[in-house]
Amino acid sequence: MTPERIPLAGVVGWPIAHSKSPRIHGYWLKKYGIQGHYVPVGIRLQEFETALRSMPKLGFVGVNVTIPYKETVLAMASSVSDRAALIGAANTISFTADGGIYADNTDGIGFINNLRQEQPEWNPSAGVAVVLGAGGAARAVISSLLSEGAPKVILANRTRMRAETLQEHFGGRVEVCNWNEAPEIIADAATIVNTTSLGMVGQPKLEFSLEKAAAGSLVTDIVYSPLKTDLLLQAEQRGLMVVDGLGMLLHQAVPGFQQWFGTKPEVDADLRETVLAE
Ligand code: ATR
Image 1: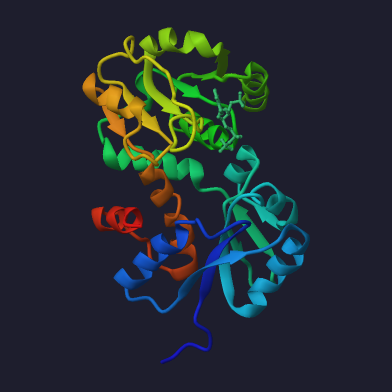
Image 2: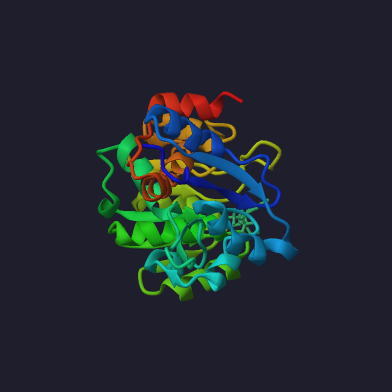
């Protein structure tokens, strides 16, 4: 039987043309033979609230939210998940039956599920986590490492004050060190994460020595362009566990797809290839 409405989902932001999310969800819709569509929706700032609120009337069941609306949308939501509230931003929303907005953040769980899938032997409680950077991405990474049992999260950021703000926000198990101290501190780390934009195509290099990293520690980068950043190449040469950043992008999409289209999708090698083939 044909449903009255084919479910629509998408990603809202401005600009939006660069988003890889339509490719990810499009791959899954096809793979699972689901009737539905996922589209990029560019909404200008001055129209954001009106446009978003009208989406359920058009048949949208939910959307991903990206820059510059990840914080704005929290204030519009009728309910907010604990993890989105903790991170202070949302990336996945669902429209409720009464037209309300439920806001969630799946970046942290996407980060963790990527590490778990790629390196099942990784044990986050085996040592501290060292996080480079204190921007939006760091917030999701820190909150998820804490909830996965990292005994401590040590933040290093060029602008120390931003790291201190996050320390105050997340409390007890978060510490701050100076940016140039981090290469020493990684000696005690089970997990080392770059959440800065350094090392991304078009950005300055990330100059960071992994010389002191403990054997068996895991190194990951949220930068996925290039897929193998200098940091990851260095980790590979040292025989450390390595996970690239593309998987985080793919895994953060899983909960939204499941909620909107009713099937929990798998992150597989073909999906990685599809997203990379641009
Ligand atoms: P996002 O929300 O994507 O994490 P962001 O908030 O702009 O982006 O954060 C970018 C991160 O990269 C910050 O931690 C930033 O450090 P500052 O807080 O000192 O700005 C870091 N970063 C960017 N360029 C850098 C550079 N040249 N050297 C060191 N850190 C840099």
